[in-house]
Image (cartoon, rainbow over all chains, first blue to last red):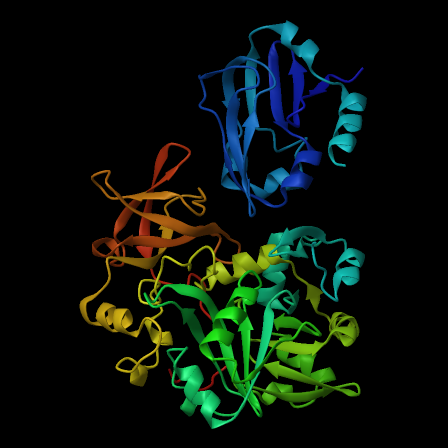
Length: 126
Length: 367
């Protein structure tokens, strides 16, 4: 079973013990177009499920990045701030956004698995 | 109902993302995306469908020139056959209804108008000319822009003689068996051409350009290109609340028209003599944050002193860029400003326009 989960706001989350790595999905980057700016949450800050935890801007518009679960930000990926084009190049790999120390594992149950998300993304695209 | 241009099917074929713009279904980008399209135009040759823009033909002789000088602040008598100039349609307060390009043609004038303004412009111009002339907003013609350093060679292959045109000059040319009108002009900061062609030949023409190495470019890249070139977009940087002097476009008012009459002439003269309260400047944020239209501008003491009217990331200058209006006392080069983006004050500086150095071919620019 895949340990990657997805939110309706088009974020992905990968679990490693009590640490979750979070980024935006390939589908999200395709909708946004070329990303030219990224802003990440402060290391050490606490973020609440479904709250804003960053911003991405494409040449067209700005979009908030939401956190799919609550927790403390333990790491952020400065390489995507320095070169936001990495987000388009490898959104679900190298271009992760931030890592959280999970506050409440039960929140994970509200997220989708890959099949559910792919279906959701396809439908929301129509 | 949303209108379609004669290149609609071609846009679809090239996987365009279509959006409604000024009542037309237009391509915002194709599969390469805005940044690649932008860079391709700067390094090679992009094709833009700008058929949504108005092509207004006004037919008449010497009297028409005189009557149009009562509308536009330019010296039309000095305009040579097939020469173009940038100008404005203004109200009595010198506020801008539209910015436009006027070209002298053999039997009158051709005026290129913004899509969102063209119907209203036609009404205003018709009224000011007292219905004395034949005016035609021609919907049977498409308008295609070919922009970039390779545009000249690509177009010359199919349209002989076109590479001899000087900047802001045009002429009648042959494409296959039909006449087309071409001017050397554009909206990207690159050398290029605008081609006025019958709707039913537009697709064929574009296909020829594509097979010679050009690529389709959407309105998204058109916007980033024009911003890097420091050019205004009507509705963003120019509107019914701004005058050409405030927009820092004094160069477009012919010198020998300053003391003569046209709508708004008194205000223009006064603003040239005693200055303006707000003025358009180039603004460069100190980091990558993008300050888009309506972003508030503050001074060192946290006092609001203006507003951004356009802002984006400039792919060729590799920097966030913007322009906007500030109180005149803050318009000097390198003045420190602060832009309020998502609650934070982003440091920025007043800078020279354009952000990207132009590559126009040499030619007469007499204003």
